[in-house]
Image (tube, rainbow, N blue to C red):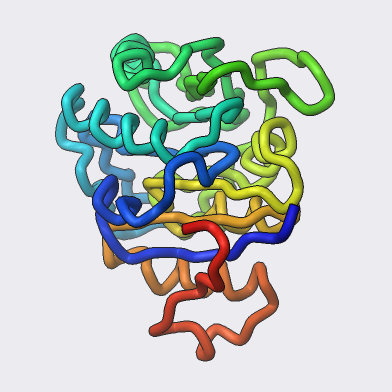
Length: 244
């Protein structure tokens, strides 16, 4: 299988994926807005509060729309990994099924450090979830493993995005479901952490991010992952052809 390209698109999902051909991707791995009106807290590491675009509330119709587009671009035998919080886990599973996917397991990401919250009247929040689904019948590389995934979260002092996911976790998901040289699609790319993971695993990547705050960081990280000088790609597409 020939190596496909790498691209971090500045646009809005699902519209920005409309030019991709049916079945071009081996998997969709993405971290959509959870619909929980999350705003990062001020700390000594993060003095600025950042809200997540599109996160005001959980809109089932909107989620089904992008999930249908994700289904279209995924090949038969491909997979979906969609991050979500505990509050909307059931809602997301229902949306995934409504979009045509075969819902399999909810993966539990144990991220070690607790987040802030009610320090006296609630349990520490230490997990997030990933809805795993098939298009047709998907086989995992290396066989069956536990649905509990233990990867430390990105330390607060190293975060470049409000909801940044660790590259190690994303590389694991890519290895389990994407053959080398195949394409990963990410409709909610953030700062392209999934793109960094895909490149590290020898895969192609097309990610879309609508929030212009993250574009410079995403452009830089994709360039660094490919060892391309950032200034050479800052205002240009990185896509080299072969996937659309």
